[in-house]
Picture 1 (cartoon, rainbow, N blue to C red):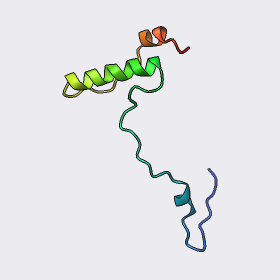
Picture 2: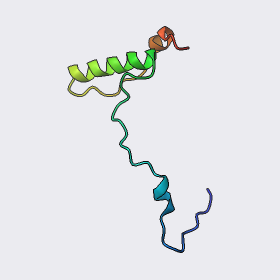
Picture 3: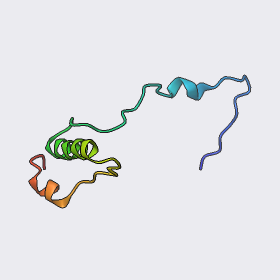
Length: 68
């Protein structure tokens, strides 16, 4: 790991490069057929279950994807 040098003038230059925009809580439906399919399944699962857990891509989703 690179050695870091502290600023002698007290400036925090890294603050200028940090993005302050909020990140989305979930991916949603944007991006393509595979993402749309998994996003839709996740939204349905979250609407129907109290503790839905993680929604993962299935092999059948990858085979049906038209973006490859």
